[in-house]
Length: 68
Image 1: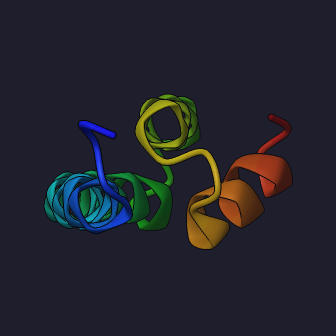
Image 2: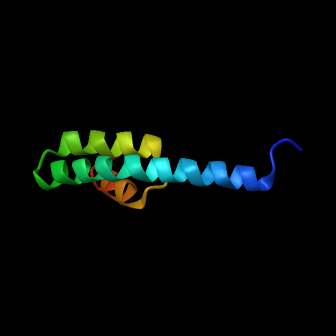
């Protein structure tokens, strides 16, 4: 086997770390837009974030509250 379980776990951890680093700023921006009442822009921000991290709970919640 050229790709051991350890290598796959390491690669998965790196991917998760990169996603986390990208998700934080996107979520902060979408929440900021939401709080400012810019709902169309916030909704777009949540959608962008969910493309990167489809299981991100906060984005799922607020995108659902805004209708998708």
